[in-house]
Image (cartoon, rainbow, N blue to C red; front, side):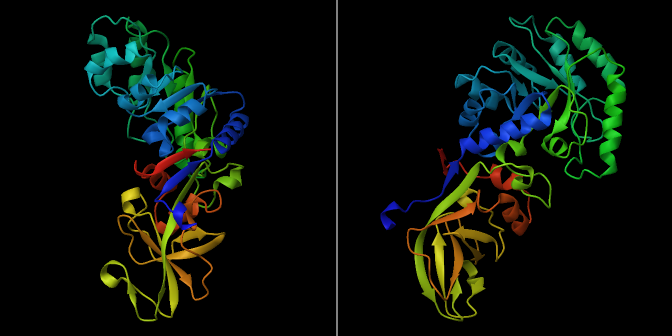
Amino acid sequence: MADLMRPAWAAIDLAALQHNVKVIRKLAGGKRILAILKANAYGHGLQRIAQALSEIDAIGVARVDEALQLRNAGVTRPIVLLEGFFDASQIPVLAASNIQPVIHNLRQMKELSQVDQLGDTLKVWLKIDTGMHRLGLEPDQVVSAYQQLLDLPQVSDHPVVISHLACADEPEHPQNQRQIELFATILQQLPPSSTSLVNSAALLAQLAPKYDWVRPGLALYGVSPFATKIGADHDLKAVMNLRASIISVRQIKAGEAVGYGGHWVASEDTHIGIVAIGYGDGYPRHAPEGTPILINGDIYPLVGRVAMDMVTVNLGRRLTVKLGDTAELWGAKLPVERVAEAVGTIPYELLCNVARRVQLEYQ
């Protein structure tokens, strides 16, 4: 019905989320789960996803403000700050809020050692660079750093020792085995500690030892990290269903141009539909002609340039779509992996770029 037309919204399927947790728990084989909720839970809504994951062992975020947002919302579970603290002034805040920072460089070590006596001690995680060459201590720094952390009165317990695989989404890449072996070698030089190496891709591919903690991100949301697969290939269910209304349907004659710059010209008489979503909502502006959009169970191609608030689909000569129908940009029936492939990007980017003006509706 036309009176139900509205701009873009995302239906967030919490039952699908719980299903994915069960799949992950089975794959994890009893290991603890650090659920990665950074970037607004990959666009799914940080607070509501955290509250829905009430049985998860811990939550991982990237920034201090994300962690504090969860604490202010009443989330009491352990929170791990994946990028650690950026400045020494943040350390007392983390201690007071029971937020566990990842230590990944010597500057952080020094700042932690120099901070005044904290009212509460910190649980910390220690990151090793085994080959990603992004964050993490060099392998030859780890034994000394680990002992220093143990000796600090500001630190409450043995650090959790972690690393990150650079090529886990390519399970056959030789870099994976090099990193796995180096991580194991370093752990042999340390006291018994909690450990973590496996992310979504490594878990789904059963690529590496699961150690004590697994760190699923993308898999929680029902999406595959592998280029040739979709979530359903792993028995995962899409959590986000991005939708928008058809706000105009009109006839276009052969030779007529549509949209900015007259970028697309109809090759024959046809109909077009205007969908109330655009790059202002996070839909990718560079989406090419032919990017799939689902309407009433059928796939239609995007045509013309993506605008701030609208995209155009070619509905064909025989019109079956009407004003007020709902288009699905990605979701349970149109995998975000397929849209990402058409656009030339990765599912992570599409999910994380969903704008705050897109209403999230939890089901």
